[in-house]
Image (cartoon, rainbow, N blue to C red; front, side, top):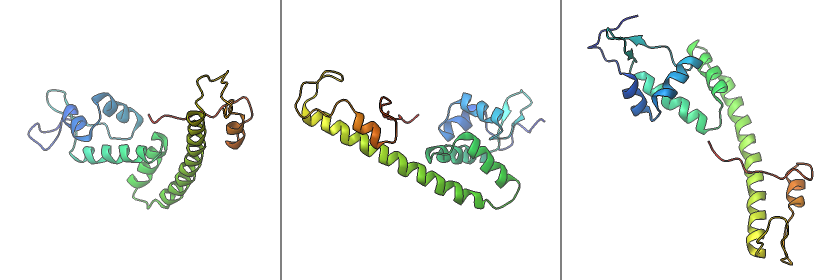
Length: 157
């Protein structure tokens, strides 16, 4: 579909810049169906409506809240069909439970790291400090993981 080049449409670079994403992310979201495939200008350039910037901002905010792109796509699809999304509340409550579990894990990790620093540990496997909390068997047990499987911090992406 062609659009009037003088219309209120934005090119890929403009949308990406205003939404704080890169153009590859924009095209990826198109392929995933998160944003509609844009019209084309007479020159063949993608011509996005201005509300695409808002939609991208919503997608990124949902990701920061812990929703996966699949979950975001499902929620957007429900909204596009004009149905209310009570599922959003249930999903948000589930995310709260996930966040609480992560906070508990991170608190355990922080406590163990504080003990390592306080004890003056200098080796992961052969620390000679009398108060050394290593190995982290207690940490593994408290985190619900079997011994021999150390808890790992998951870094934000």
